[in-house]
Image (cartoon, rainbow, N blue to C red; front, side):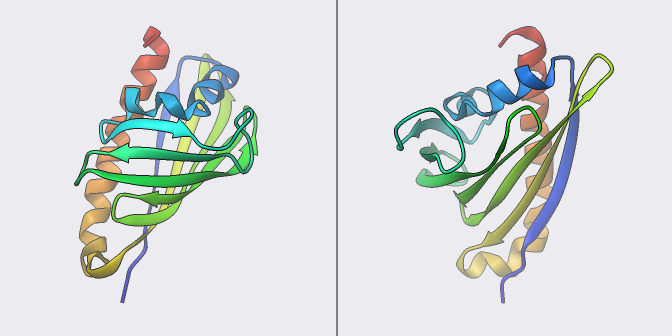
Length: 147
């Protein structure tokens, strides 16, 4: 029996919601702030938006190629992707809110483990949340300091 992993992380970035959304929605930039991703490329033509599809190479926990699709697109407010992420499938969403001096970014994660990992998913949840929090901190610092 598999067990979903769900968590949220939040960070405040000293940049406008438009700046944060523009960077987040350029998925080719993922390797700059997500240590587990080595490359990401768009596989559908045209500008990024609802329904755009991507392939990426993950190096952790093992090297694998995965795909995801943009499933929510509300410029400057909300962005979500659904697909395969390592040994999981699920949805990652980003909600942006203007605050004094910048943007609060909330990342919601819901993942379903594949195969036997389901038995250990509860244990993996806290480690995943911490890893995602580290990535968001790299994103924050990069956006504030111009990558």
